Image (cartoon, rainbow, N blue to C red; front, side, top):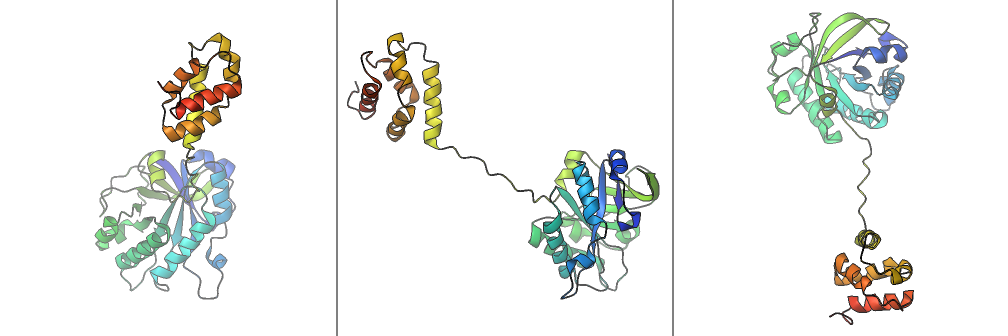
Length: 297
């Protein structure tokens, strides 16, 4: 189990040199609501978010971000698209994204959250986590959200560092167990538990880190390496042609060898047969002749 905190502008300018060593992970508020048409996204980004995120990730902290929603004012699709824009803009490390649902509204919270998650998934290809309190969990059937594989961050301030709550989810991924801890010099601060290991935490993360495609080696380059290695270890190579073989451009042999698919071992065997009197060019002619069948026996 991992211990962490969640913070926002309300904690002021955080001393991350003090906080980071005191926790295993940190959630931070990224945004609230969403901009109206014509408004800047920046107006709805937490005032301390960029600093908090950069300071935490610079110290290799496990991180998550949360978006505080206003269902009484906004449609979930609009808020989700705003979160997606913010994620693409700010999140450059593996990061958990959570929807913080706390506000009262006449709208059905399950439906609103589900539409938010579906839109965010369509935008990012990612299933976010849901933050709700125990009371809201007990009032509604959250099975549609559970079925779509959105994890649960449960707020229950029992001030116990245990996770035993029964919810609509098979298990609680994160529990906010306190709202008044003193951790890393911050007091009061919300304290959280992650129900798993660091490796499991990362499985909940959105990750847009560029992936370096694997290097696909040219078959010719592979065969050159194989042939050069075989020549180096050829114990039966006659000493009298040793210097001649050194001068043979392996690339030229392989260009022909690739086309006729002669195994490296056979080429090595044939190199052993190169007459000692041959110059480098003569050795090449001998080998290429062999590769095209002129000298095959």
